[in-house]
Structures are given as C-alpha cells and as structure tokens.
Length: 158
Image (tube, rainbow, N blue to C red):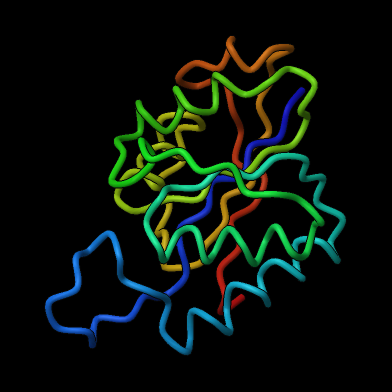
C-alpha cells in the first residue's frame, strides 16, 4: 500500500506584465497558504518521504514549503509543468519502491484529472489543494488507472 498526494501549486501572482507563465511567483495569499497547508499535513501525521515538483516557479515555491515542514528536499521534474493526468501518473510510477508516501506538486487541470483517473473521484481542485490517495500497489510501477482511492481532499479553506 502506498500513499500519493497530488498537490496543486498555491495562488500565483498575475501582476507582473511580460513574465512568462513558467516564471510566475506566488502572491501574498500563496506565500501564506503553502506553509500553512504544509504544517497542517505534518501535524495530521501524513507520511511523506518524497516531494517531486514541476519546474515552474509557483509550483517549486509551493513544494519548498512542504519540504521545509517535512525536512525533505524537492526533486524537480520539468515534465510536470502543464502535465496531463497520464504524465503525472507516469511520474508517480517511476518513484522508488522504498518510498511509501510521496507528493507530486503541479498544475491544473492535470492534477484534478490525475485524481479522477487514479481514483474515479471527480474533485474541485483550487490552488493549494492536496488530494491524499491510497494506492493498492506493492510497487509504484504497478500504478494504473483505478488503482487508488481518494482518502481526503484538503483545501486552504477547510
């Protein structure tokens, strides 16, 4: 049994004209919500051993907040930027088998679609939301459509 957390980046800043989408930072709300959500997960006893993030600034900054709360490093995977559900689940399938709990930090609509593909659950996925999914596999490489169950969806407004 594995636990996969699929996380959408925190709220980003749209006020910087001419900035590439990939380079948008978090806004004030995002800089507040990401550490708060990270502390919440830690305080609730979520088992997190690996964090993999999109290379986009807003996603990596969000992942950094989780990494700080859990004492982990962030592994950057550029393929998570604007990734499809299929790509997101392929990244999860490449996780090492000694990792029992992992988080992927990325973007919508891919993250919401990945939750649906993995668990069959359709979710609203606002910024900084985290879907905690139980995956009934012995090896991450066995992860397939429908092999997971949505345990809980957390949002900053919960």
